[in-house]
Image (cartoon, rainbow, N blue to C red; front, side, top):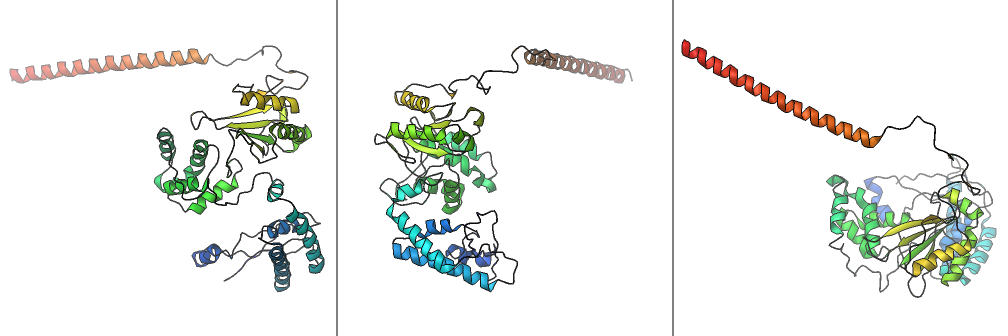
Length: 384
């Protein structure tokens, strides 16, 4: 079985790179991939090796896995030294093992949840629980099925899988904000695809939740513009108000505090998005609250909890204008102006009605003429 190798560049130079084999995508090699022998080729930093190794069930096993990774990298570099594969920078295995040991020891002393919070989304690994396992049946509600069927009709029958993302979105809304394993299996069954195809999509997009959520999923934008404008202070204030940390749910099940990457409101940074799962698919909302301070962010959540409807959008402006106020379009534009579209619609309707009436008149005249011609012809036949 041939193997190909590649290196992803643009990695921090302070971290050694690691190569994994990738098998060509053909029928001959599918068995190897299903057996777990082929992981997508990637070049990762040493800290990623630490993160992978610490998922092992014990510290000793983690150390063995880390050492294996380093040994594999050294063997590949030696075996393919004549090829064009570039490995930079090279690493010293003993020194790296020592660094790994120290890093893994520190990380294993912290809780798994603390480690998960270093990522932008919660951990996507499935673990069976009383609330999330394949034995729990899931069906789309009767009032939701018309919407599901309408979505599936958009695509040809041989492209059913194109409906996967919208169906997962509706299923999440119905299932109180999260995709359980049985929900994903149901979508796979409806689309006639292998369940793994649905798992791939559900764990790739951060707007799909694999953990049970609160009634309100409060997501703080953590990207650079919002961070520079105080997003970290907003997240801290919300964390203190809710009494939870990122990716946790309050004891009463009201709020889940999360994080989301850029949501396109940089001009009104910082901002949060709130998904409301209280009323299923029919009552689902996903609203932005912008131009926040720690105090106003907490106020938004207080109003939501009280059943009120806080102002959506900017909390201090009417539109995306400068903080000092609007500086352009402060008076009516001088023109040229657009046509009065309502009048255009009326004119088009009148013209269509006139054309239809003219067509009816012409049809009646043609019928009368044909009748007269037939009568004249019959009269001529009699004279003969």
